[in-house]
Length: 261
Image: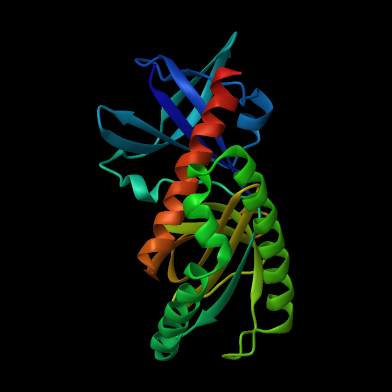
């Protein structure tokens, strides 16, 4: 059975639901995460699926439900050959962003470089690279050290942050991929400006800290604000790989939860 990913747009969020095709011809799918209420109240539904090795995307519309099968019709042009690194998963934390103009771009690229080097040299990053190879007893010790490192980082962040005048706007995260992020803002953002972005994902043993410069590539207006899609235009390659690994791991977890439970 082929997997289908639905990106369901709501007033202040985008929810991802995993499903499987049970009727390819009529776009019939099944998932533990779907309800008629969720689909009927959605503002937009975007579907992603594979045909062979090709990732495909299109907007779809919910038509009807027949027992456990939900039927849709395609209502937009079909995009083929989408890049895997731009496939996004849900992340419901926070991002810190600062709007910057083109004259400040190089200054913030240098800031990205400096902060990325710092992030890669932390104890947490070193532990993350070796923990899976250690014995169970050593893994417990390393997990304890990770917790201490995370707490120290929080204290340091509260005491520092005076390099460039960083007046951050904290926004609600919607999703993330190796190619960019999505977030919700109650206020409109000038799409001609660039964004300096700081992200710090802390979920169990997963710690993904990154710094990037991005550009808004999509805007979806709702009754509560705006959902923006941002593409990274400058990010450290190793930290991008950390994001991609996190996305793949979470992808597997969410598939199991939505389809196999």
